[in-house]
Length: 241
Ligand code: GLP
Image (cartoon, rainbow, N blue to C red; front, side):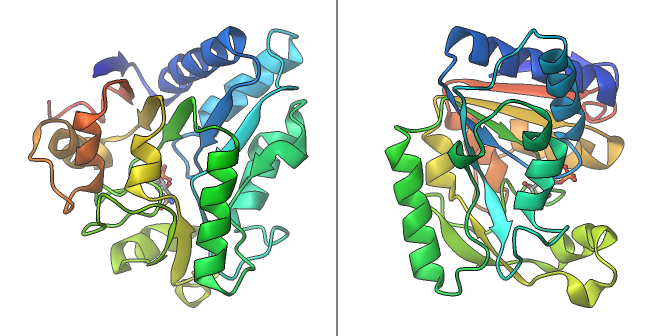
């Protein structure tokens, strides 16, 4: 595991974007596993800037996103499809038909998850998976207690995740209670994993993830067993280490 200490959020974003750029340059038709949340937004901004300067080409890139709220349509401004469109896809030359997000409108959970696993498999796996870190150690929407061997599945969101995400919705009642998420098994099958972590509020959980026991109680702790993980965290997030 490699840990890069960034000065602040902006520096973290630039370092992470550098790693993603290197992946695209080395393998123009790579499969990127992408994430939502506030952590990767700056990384996407930086990638867009470099694309606009002519330094990056997304035309052959495929993307698979980690997760999607069950019940939200792509047009809903809180859906993760909408997030990806507005924060990255609409601003670069990626072919949108090669950008995949679980289908939040598929009411049959088993079908939604099986279809998504098939999509990931069809791309031949993920070259680089970008991850943010939830306050309770979740990755994607794999909440504490999630079995490590799961592939894409439907989850009931925990109270703490609903609480953390309610800032984006008009009221707590509007936050969906379920989501489709890639499982830990899908995440661990990525060739490379890049985790971006920012802020003092993530310092305790980051310490546990990196140096605590490997346990489903802290889903991201499994990353200790992956052979190619890069953590880019700012000083505040690394302040307890
Ligand atoms: C959500 C997402 C995760 C993300 C987490 C942290 O629950 N499903 O993929 O990593 O939030 O979000 P943030 O980066 O905003 O702290």
